[in-house]
Every structure is written in C-alpha cells, then in structure tokens.
Image (cartoon, rainbow, N blue to C red; front, top):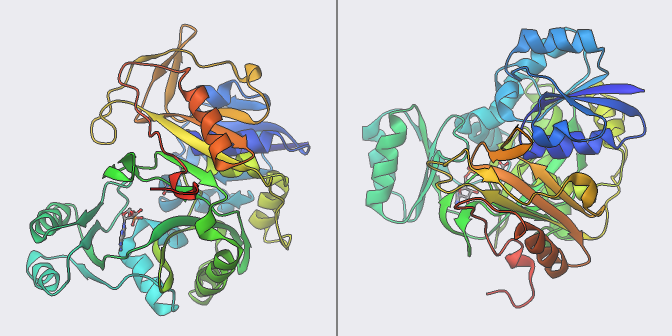
Length: 422
Ligand code: AMP
Ligand code: GLY
C-alpha cells in the first residue's frame, strides 16, 4: 500500500487529498499542512509543516517513506520545492521552478506563447512609466494591465477608462515589471491537463466564476465557484484547445529543454476567432478542482504516479457524466480585507452527507470543537447533480444551512450553462 504527500492547505488540496485517499492503492495521505477538512478525512493525516520549507518537506518524505508527492499551490512550485524533492529521488507531481515560471512570470509566459505559436492577446512588457504610458496611449480601451509576478489574482485590472489604466499602470510598476494586454471578448473557461514530458492527458473542462458578485460583476477574486462540464468547452472546442494550445505548449516545453511533470492549466477566453490563452498556471485551479475531483472516476493516484515517473499515460480518464458544481462561501471583505475569526455554524459532519455532496474546507480553523473562518474563501459546497439546475438547487440548499456573520456567496454559479440565461 502506498503513502502520498500532498502539499498545501486550501480547498483544492482538500479535494486532491480526499480523492487520493479513495484510491485502493493508497493507505495514507499526509497533508502538509492540510486543514480541518483534511484532518477529518478517512486515510488523511495533517502534518504541521510549511509547504515552502523544502528541506523540511524532503526530511518528512524520507521519514514517512512516501511513494509520491503532489504539490497543490503555485508558491512551492515557483520556489523550487519540486526540484529539492526530485533531487532526493522522490516521484513528484508538480513542475520544477524553471517550468513553473509559466505561472510565476506573465512576461515569461507571453514570450513562451509567442515563441511556440500559442494564441494569446497582443501585449507589451514594461519596467518604466514613460514607455508604458506611450504604449498605452496607442491601445484601444478597454485594456488590461497586469503585474508580472504572482499576485493571487490581484495583479490584473481590466481598465474601462484610460484613467483607470494609468492608475493601475503606476500602482503595479511600484511592485515590478508590468504587462499591458489587448482586451479579449468572449467567455472564459479552464482547460487543465496532466502533462508528463511531452504527453498530454486532458481533464474534463470546467468554468470558474472569478468576479465577486452575481452576473460576473465586482472585483476579481481567486474564484467564487466552478462547475464541470461546461458547454463552452464542448467536445469540439476541447479538441481544438488540445490541438492549438496544449500540444504546442507541451512540445514547446520540451523544445525549450524544460521537463514538465504536473498539471498544466490554461485559463482561456473563447473568442469568436477561437480559444486564446489568458494565463497558464502550473497547478490545478481552485475552485475548479473541487467539481473535477467529484466527477473523476479514474484512480487519481495511479495516473499521477505514472506522470510523475514519466511512464506512459492512459489515453483518457473516466468521468461521471453528471454535473458537479461548487459554491464558495466567503468572508465579508473578501478579496481585499477579509474579516476572519467568525464562528461557523451548521456545517454537517462529513458522514452525514450523501456520496454526491461534499464540503471542502478552504480556510477554516478548528478550536474547542468549533470551526472558525480563517481566510477569504472558507468552504466549497460541492455537489453532483443530473443537470446544472439540479446541482445548483442542492448546492444552495446545503449552503443555506451554514452561517456566520457577513457570509457571502454568489447566487448564480453555473448561470452561463443554464438554458435561457440572461
Ligand atoms: P489572469 O490572472 O491573467 O487570468 O487574469 C484574471 C482575470 O482578468 C481573467 O480571468 C479575466 O477575467 C481577466 N482578463 C485577464 N486578461 C484579459 C484579457 N486579455 N482580456 C479580457 N479579460 C482579461
Ligand atoms: N480559479 C482560478 C485559479 O485557480 O487560478
């Protein structure tokens, strides 16, 4: 029987750990550091260690004798924790630091896409205000201003006026280089694949809801909900994304001499001209992972181990044909100033929920037998339903059982997939 280590402590990592623990080949999933959700998951155990502490993680992997390490968030990937674990001889699912620059630097990602003919928005990269302002004045409005490095979704402004664009340009330049990008019109979707040195195995398509408020209004967040499958990534469009984006990206990584064993996430705008890449991430999406793990029927451990070792991947994965939908429950003030520490009421115990419903913890703290909010996105209510509306009704019925002062969630997750949407 195998032992697996999962780095990270969010809703994505709870879903990954839960799914890995269900594999017949796995008897222990160590979550570094995990959260109160993974603490209560059968077969999972939390270890109080930072996922960024490469030396500590390597020592723990040796002590526990793990057979596979899965890295959830981007920060340990970008900082080279994969490199340290690989050097120590462990099969790791998550790319090395050099390849993780695809997510860690927007400018690196843009020149990678340019070099390998991957469709994306036109752009310019700047380190100084003068040239940036001159470029901006030649661009139509709306225009998109992005900070170059990791910014947890807060480094992007879709400016509707020149004034707004200038304000973002100056604000982001204080942090470092910026990218000014053509505004793309269309519907967003997430196409994620398991990649292993030139092999690509696509997951089912999904759609995130990045804005805070219903109708895709308000500020950008890490994601307020997601569902899978999504009509915007139907079989024909998924095939096209595979051919025009994932395959050239995987070949491009090889051509650039970058080994890549991990999830590759293409955040897409499906425009009238076809799919365009908004961003690459070198990990699974959060909250896209929660519905994806609910739908995945294949053994996650087996396929991630094959990919981590560089073995041949299966031709496809097996998915539940139902819709899985995740509603994120957030704290008041999220995303800018999340107010945390409130006592959470009404969370059913995992064993009280039917198989097709799951509450994934994203930022909770357990103390004295109670749960408290511990970050902006707190819980992900995830259900499988026979249709988007069936999944919505059940997810919202479950969400309404849970409360804390100022609890916020979107009421329209999945709206783009509903017939007669407004
Ligand atoms: P990113 O972190 O690059 O994915 O950007 C965050 C969000 O900003 C995306 O999910 C889009 O909603 C929006 N966005 C980013 N780039 C563009 C673009 N070129 N055109 C339109 N919207 C964009
Ligand atoms: N849900 C968007 C992301 O994980 O980047």
